[in-house]
Length: 185
Image 1 (cartoon, helix red, strand yellow):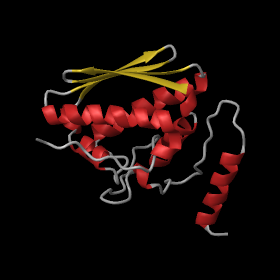
Image 2 (tube, helix red, strand yellow):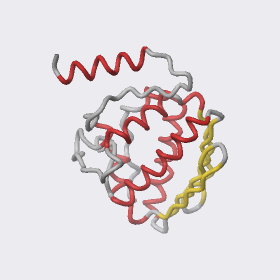
Image 3 (tube, one colour):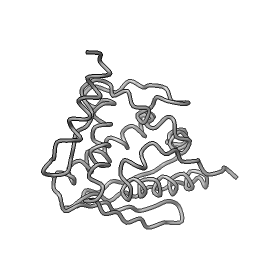
Image 4 (cartoon, one colour):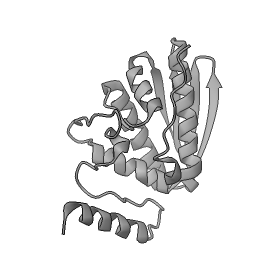
């Protein structure tokens, strides 16, 4: 059986099995192969540091997308960015949220892009050095404050917060939908 067929069957099996916490792990071992982690149109594959690779990041993101109905999110716009609070009553989801947020901001800092096919995410990573952020763990989730002194980067931060809201609201349906980057005017 070919490698791609084994992955398809593993994905189908993972989706068919009920998970008590709602956190399915639909991606098998390996580098993932999903355009959302950096491949696809305009996105180059990136190597990940030891201990935190593309496949793990993708698995965590997909698990959260599958568990989206157990996630609550509030966004407060600031003049120079956003403050987001993302929570869940499910302890496993909370742990995934914290891991995911830390991993994504490490990728941002290291300029290891995800969703290379998506214009918004490409622009966000291109302007990563202009983003100041603070992550605060909460008992039931995580609070993130993202700010920038650059007006265009503030637009990117706010557009990203809106896209994450879409992920929380729609789950996997929103995953492969591209998001235009705001105009730099």
